[in-house]
Image (cartoon, rainbow, N blue to C red; front, side):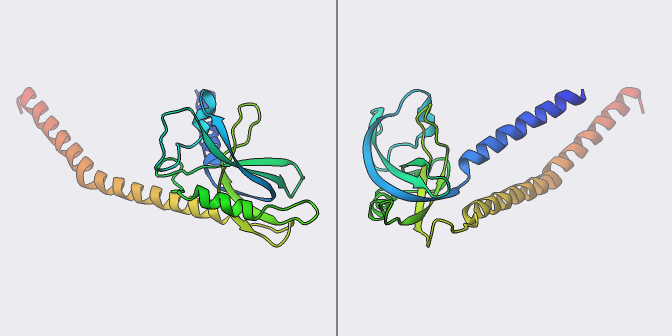
Length: 202
């Protein structure tokens, strides 16, 4: 019975780790090449990796204009493309409603290889050419140079908020258990004991 438990635990931890890696914010130092909007057909499996249509727009069609930010990574010079969509009030709860403003910021920070402007893009999600999915940009901040070291403040803040939420939920459950479940269980035990005494003629 030991190995099935270990395997089950590893599966659960892998699912949690994968979910956290996709959802938690990350930051990349990049050079913006171009900010553009393209008509994209969002259907099939990859639709789960796109946000809902921007707040205040219709989502009836599977094809819609999606903003993209094309960049070159500072660390290895490879291409990285981000989508730029509102998250609204849905998951993940970043409450992003300013995609057009962010697109304007990105366009203003476009630069060339000879005269680069380096920026830190905060995002969540994955990039996959195979299923055509892109990480969603949350914010853009100009940095001094390509070798700047970024402390993962967004991830730390999200984890602290999540830990506080778990702690509060645990405390609420603990109080509910002490005030409701334990007395109810004790009451049932007492009534069951009295019932058995009656059956035995005591």
